[in-house]
Image 1 (cartoon, rainbow over the protein chains, first blue to last red):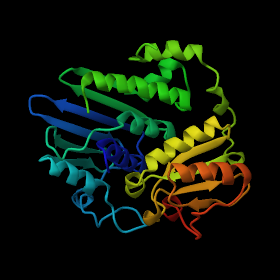
Image 2: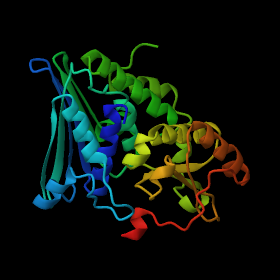
Image 3: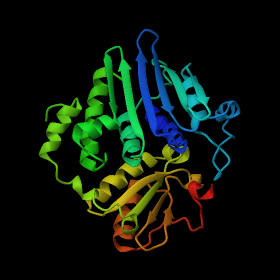
Image 4: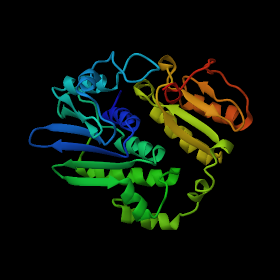
Length: 181
Length: 133
């Protein structure tokens, strides 16, 4: 994983598998503490205490096609490399929140990367889910959601190369303005 | 072009270019379309599945191939990621491994457009995570 945006894409795949209909991804830069936190929240089936404690074990997975599950362990490793960490809160039948924090100025921190690309890929291939992206930094905040896009542009489906490209530019312009990187 | 900062800006631009977006709205008749599934688990993403998927979606649309590109979980071929499954209308699905941009391009031009097989096929019976559970 070369960038944090890929971790976000990966963890969000778990949200899809969890079967909820709403996923909120937040990226927050806290200038005072020099921390960047990435939070991915779904309203899917949730996990039991035991599943939560095993989620960060690379040799545990809920899937049946193979016996390892590297998504969360890698995300945690990359967060811990910067002196940050990863927390999971979850309740059966309610949903799950995965939150990783990174020390922004740590040399091992990966760049945030193509957040807009990851988000739009999730959006365009999972139309049954309400996706929300919330970004904030000392410079302000920005949020966008699929229901907002649908109603503003009067669309049923958010896909197509041109639309995706314009949405990407729009999100990128806002991220640049917030100085999120 | 002025900077697009909000959905309102986007709407203005979009009103000028409505064409092109309509093509997919009609008939989600999946059986008659080319179906491409990109394996997007940790292994796939780490090896570049995101780029493969973006390329596939864009290239198929630009080249006028009616297709549905979706993502699936791990198909169990982590060693061969990025992997994609391509199902042409009326044929059995085929899984290709090591699908970077160049390979994706070759798959579109040779297999999807003219049914010609290309290197990189994973020759097995497999079950996707959905079918196994």
